[in-house]
Image 1 (cartoon, one colour):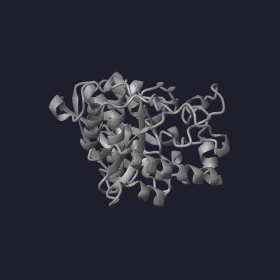
Image 2: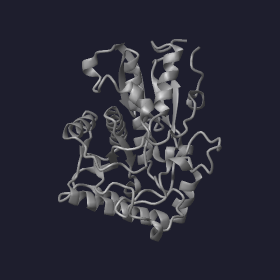
Image 3: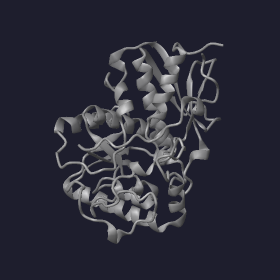
Image 4: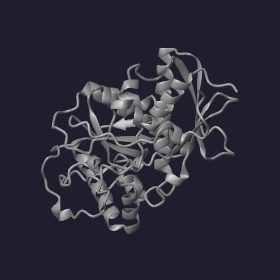
Length: 332
């Protein structure tokens, strides 16, 4: 049996990095297989870990898998090989979302990303805690926008007025989510009840951030049980730094590219000492997602709203082991 030109330890590192990617509700909706004939690492959807109420068409699942693919790319490059990526490579297998093949020796000029992103994979955590009011340097904003552009997406930093509008759309989505019993039950399914919960996916209570939030910063209520009148205008930054990730088209390949762009942005942000959390609520309502598109022409398709800033790192959320997500044994 022929394997990729990576030894067992490197292959396990590749899968560990892949599952370290962010995913909606930390569902980790992916599986991997090493194809012995093509030496591809195949990345497949895990439909049993989908969210039919919040993500009925699977867009968020594809974005999550795309982020995982980017981590695979970074890790293959870290071990000295050039990653060749194909998205939706076999139409007759819709569950096969991507393949990553280590090919040739690495050419640093063609990887499309910084050489120091691999360590950032392990340091990147979503942080739902308050950030400081320290502004993001313009040079960092430009580098984050370039990271998204290199993946076929766009990242814009809205004006203060547009930020307020986007946060208003997010607040409306959060209000709808709290009022939807099915979505509330779905989110609670992925919420850990105690730090000793053995579940290897989902979100522990410690990762949810403070129970009180600014009125103008609608953080997700994973329990769907908070009461708006209890939210207090304290702690969170006065003017959040928000970035909107968009794509020109809205096909499955665009969702996968958006996921790669998202993770590229998050890892570059991590290198610069920035924290991030994702305001995904309006993506879950088709009309509100359209409202996120930049005004006045509403061009492009919103894929993610990202809050960035300087503050606490946020706790690491649990990840499944490589053995739990690989369909066949890794070579020894």
